[in-house]
Image 1 (cartoon, each protein chain N blue to C red):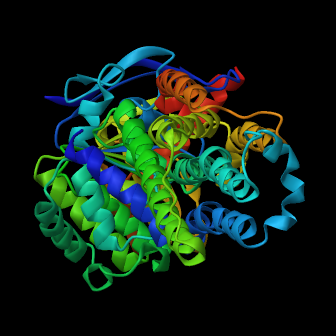
Image 2: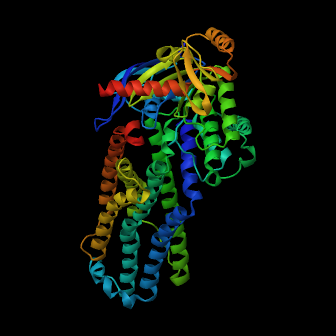
Image 3: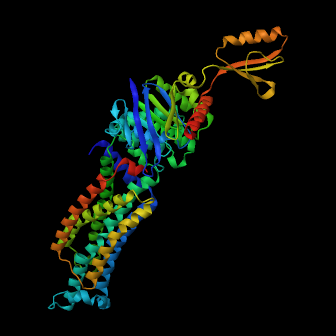
Amino acid sequence: MNRKMKAIIRKDIRSIIDNKRYLWTLLLLPIFLGVVFPSIFVVLVKLVPTDMNDMDALIRLLPQNLSEAEIFDALLDMILNQTIPIFFMLIPIMCASVMAASSFVGEKEKRTLETLLYSPLSLRDVFKAKVLASTIMSLVITFATFGLMVVILNIELQFIDQSTFIPGFTWLWVMCLLVPAVTLMSIVFIVKGSAKSKTMEEAQQRASFLVMPIVLIFISQFTGLLMIQPIYILIAGAVLLVISYVLLQKATAAFTYEKLIQ
Amino acid sequence: MNAIRIEHIRKVFSEHKVAVDDISLQIEEGQIFGFLGPNGAGKTTMVKLLVGMLEPSAGSSSVMNIDSTKDGVSIHAISGVLTEHAMMYDHLTAMDNLVFFGEVFGLEKEESIARGMKLLEELDLLDAKDQKLGTYSTGMRQRLSLARALIHKPRVLFLDEPTSGLDPESALRVNQLIMKLAKQGVTIFLCTHQLRYAQEICTSYGLIDHGKLLASGTLEDLRKQIYDGYTVRMKTSVMPIHVDYVEVEDGQIEFKLDSEDRIADIIRDIVQRNGNITHVSSRKMSLEEIYFALMKQGGMQDES
């Protein structure tokens, strides 16, 4: 990566940080999904377990020979280590799509993309810099949220019953493979739609299609219909990462100056 | 050396709209070339073809011997482009914008700052260097865009209506800067529909309408294509003989002469016939007159 590309990455990240509306969008959802949402489960399961009747389906998935206290600990472990990680993927989808929409479509909308295309950087390098900016921003926010979530959940658990939360293998594969994969996939959706999208909002709507499978898996898990084991997360993450990368290369290669400045 | 070479270039957009139709041109290094035509004539399309942003439907072009189609990136490295649609970042200050574009053009940050300060001073924007671009007026934005196009010391400058939206004082500064750059050897490709403005600063011209090049060359070359003589205006009590004159405003008459030498003979003749002459002036065809004459010719050819 050369200095010219680094300048674009810095500028793209700064564009989002300087815009209070987008910055709050990028921060509020991760705080809700990564901190507030898991905390609610911790409080519900640990402090008012009798109100957990809605989770009967999940409880039925647990081993039968557990005591009542063990059932609720196992339930919390299942929620935090298998259900929340899937829901957590909404964070990179949202971050990457907001960032990529600003970086690709926002620049086109504000007519700054044309100016950038007059620079001595190939179209491919301009795209690469923009994809990197969106990826960096998405990963930084997602990993920071994850770190914050682990810290806050452990503080809460210490206060409640001196227990701890140690992220399991699902988290490992989600953070290392699925998060980068859905980040790239969101960027692909935005990049592919960027030639047609006239506004940032329009572009972001395209990426919202990615939210649907995540929500469906989350609901399926919650209703006990489906419980994805870490190994499947590993496989799905690896496959999705490869597909996203290939699609991104194809989407980038399909662009010409002419398509972008029309 | 030719800084810009265009050979039989043609651009047809998807809806079969012919934006540029078989244009050939050569522009010498250090020239201020005025590419003149009405809005929608194909001027901006030509700039985009030259810098490799658009693919020609036929023909070819090069800038400083670099093929526009094959190596747009190298052309961008030696060119500065100012078009109506090429905006800068509203959330950055003027200086931050210049530093960013300097870095994108491969300059070190310190070099970009030093160069930016010099350009902002020349374009009278130094006091507003730390203001965000969002607070800039149209004229200030236009001047900053010119500074941006010049940040990397380009050898060729493509300017699309560089003085549009500028007050007379700012326009004068911009023109002075353009002429200074040309003296330093920078080739300027200036698109405008302001003919009087073009005549003030350009050294050669290309006149375009509906994508077709009507004529090109220096003002003298263009005059030769239409009329290279003089238009004489006179206010006299006795009408001259042996000339076809027409009456214009304020009791004046106007006639055409191939040579200025004949004016003296005409005055002598009128005086000998006891005529009183209160006004005599002569001029060659202006760029505006040539342009309209060529447009009329072009229109007549299209009709036939």
